[in-house]
Structures are given as structure tokens and as C-alpha cells.
Image 1 (cartoon, rainbow, N blue to C red):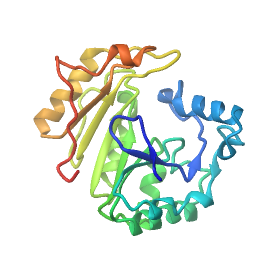
Image 2: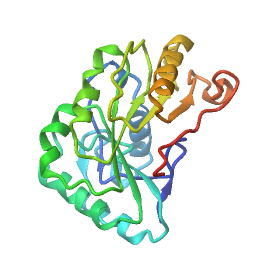
Image 3: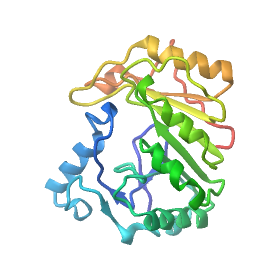
Image 4: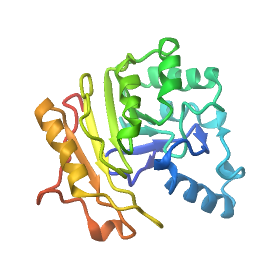
Length: 237
């Protein structure tokens, strides 16, 4: 059975890799690290190593057993393109996704350089979406790397949004997600930063999904932007 996700823009999660390391300011208050430490303390066997990068060969074929079509976030507790994940293991993950054509897989990475480097060694079946995380304008270069991949649906997650991203080249991008940081120590998100992304998406006719304002009380702060919720997704979804 797939693990249902509380992440607003996906349905289920699959973690053939767990653990990660910080590469940019958006990683500062990583929710996955907090959760991994908690699961380690609870004795969950997959988190015996805490937040160290760990491969889970025994979970590789799980999606093939899930017969009901799912939208699956791949490695919600890690980054598939982390330098400590061997290329052959990444290829194994892709082979499973290629076989499980009845599912839709969503991969999100901050390591866009390695994503682009491995792009030609991976088979991008139409059910595989690839996205990059961008927290402020300094990391817009990840979008340029994303654009050069062969995935059918390419998306950007501006989350946690901790600064303005300025003018963004959205050519070839199929979906945009925006969200503020949540949890302990959450940094504030300014409405102007969100709106500048929204208006660029509208001009480019790109689906826009607003996940949350975040803060230390995510539920209280809600998801309303300009008085409404924004749950737009690509037509292929």
C-alpha cells in the first residue's frame, strides 16, 4: 500500500533513498531532517542511520505492487541526485518508474547540476515529472539546468520561498509551486515575492499552485492568496 502524503501537491510518497545534506539556504530548517531524527528515536528501521544518506533496495519495487494509480512524490525524505546516491541506483529507480506506467512520479531536486549531467543516461517515460527547488533569485540557475532535461513535465518548487526570485525565464516549464517555510524557526514569506511569481505564471499561461504561507502555525496561516486557493496543475494531470 502506498504511503499517503500530507503534502498538498502530491498523493503518496516513495522513499528508496532517505537522508540528505544541506546545499543552500533553503535547507536550513529541513522538515525531512526533523522527521528522520524523530523516526530514528522511535526505532523505525529505515532511519537507523538518522539523516545520513541511506539506500533501501528492499523498497525499490514497491510501486509495482501498488495497482491503484497514484501520484507519487519520489524521495520526500531525500534528494535522488545527491552525490552519495550511486548512478546505477538512480537508474534502478528510473527502471521501476518506467515499468509502473500507471503511476505518475514527481521528483524534486536541489542538485540540478547532477540532474543535468545524468539526464542522457536516464529514460524519461511520460509519467516521470522532474522539478527543481528555488528559494530565491540566487538559485534561478537551477531552472536553466532543468530546462535542458528530457522530462515531459518540468516544474519548479519555489519553496521555502525566502526571498524575491525576480524575473524568471519560464520557457519549457509546465508547472509552478510556491510555498512559505513552516515549522520551528520558519522564515517569513512576503506577499510581494509570491505575487511576482503568480503574475509571471499568468503571463506565460503556466499552472500555479500555492501551497502555504507557512510560519510556525501553518494551519492557522492557511493557503489563501488574493482571497482564493490556487490548485492549478498541468493538463496532463
